[in-house]
Length: 323
Image (cartoon, rainbow, N blue to C red; front, side, top):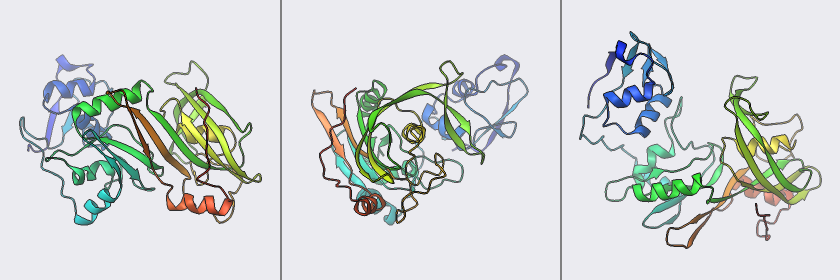
């Protein structure tokens, strides 16, 4: 393992993207590791955080954190027995290609600023023949439910293509503050990363043509309602944008209960826990052999409580409309 390095950008590299510059200097470091170094602020330019697309200028100083030497395997992360048992208890399904986890609320999928404990850092507890599984998609920190990790590079590529080609069918359950009108339909439009009043990152709805905007589509259906106070809403995202479901329920003026980023002045029904009521209920993946893998996660305790309090039958048959 090398020590911290400080490398000055040469004239020949003036205008280069930071991530490409790094790859030329350290070709043995995988791209995912580079992204993590950038995200966690370990790779810096002139002492400041930077993104991979940042353009370098000659004379700038790039701080390189300790890196494994070519051919050197990074030391395995030490996992406590408690964390190992915690991860194993999350397993819903496992085969030769993947592991499906039932992610709890409050646990981040990846690390970041002020986040040291996360699923990515605990995956070595589920290692097979010394190789930990790898992430292929993500859930928000406070969202619960089905999270898939791949056991090898081949399955990671296959699952990744399922998500990219929209062949993975994702179904989420949520409890909304109020009842959506209409009771079923589609929310679609463009969304863009912005900043809320408190300075936190939020997604906002924008017009078509806005720079950096991405199109998002969600099918939804109200499965049950408790008067006008709350509803059990089943959602199927047809795109995979950050905070997509949370923003779309907010745009219907019925935000998810416990969502502090996309909320309303209307108080949610009394007795419900102040946690995000959004659950990745099921995931269907087409297998290369022509079959399908269906993965389903039970409701977390705070949503079971909400269903009982509001009189929703979690065993009711729900038929989501197709695209």
